[in-house]
Length: 305
Image 1 (tube, rainbow, N blue to C red):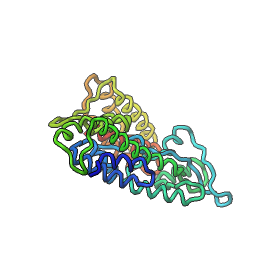
Image 2 (spheres, rainbow, N blue to C red):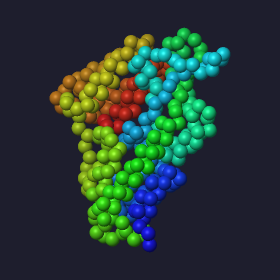
Image 3 (tube, rainbow, N blue to C red):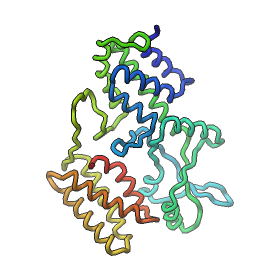
């Protein structure tokens, strides 16, 4: 019988095989070989990154152009300050890979090869106020950005099968020897190496019966991210008129500042402060500062819970 590893490797090289099909086969292969990291990753890719403790990887970030719909001239570019433009011009796509494949098909049908994302109502209002005219604003993303995601997933699967072959793990059909199963976890490193930056990820390498910790210290990138968050929260503080919310927000800023400067910051305290800030930001409509805060917290909070 043909080797399942070599069959998957061959199909990964063929563009005619969809990435969603490759992922299902990779998931089956990883389960049989008991490669937990690859099982976890393929499940997220197939079902979507809907677990708040596991944000989607960097290769799922797409970039587009912000445009406004002019009733006389069609879509025209919108010029914003650099920080706002950077914040709004990119989107993280946690969707299942099948949805991303559908986005590609939709983009290919569009003569301009782009897909349009409409901003939430509160962001729309804030942008209209900044532009001083009532034109609907949207983000136009080239379909090639979505294609880049599926190509990256295809390459990860291909590199893993090549690593399995290199280790002599081929199997007979869908059956593998005990020795092959013992060697297979050694190939898991390809996941972290190919995906890129996975700081504080829940994926582990060769971690049977292990526990995970996520420490925060004054030298880590996390401290810089907290300081950046504090800066955004201070902007929101200036916008809020309700004195009670203002006082609450000021108190949480003080908590974050003290923890950021502490030689031994406490994850629990930081997490609770972030949750309070999130609640206030969610209740503040039409604020770009609130939108920026919520985006930052979506990435940061899982590491403090």
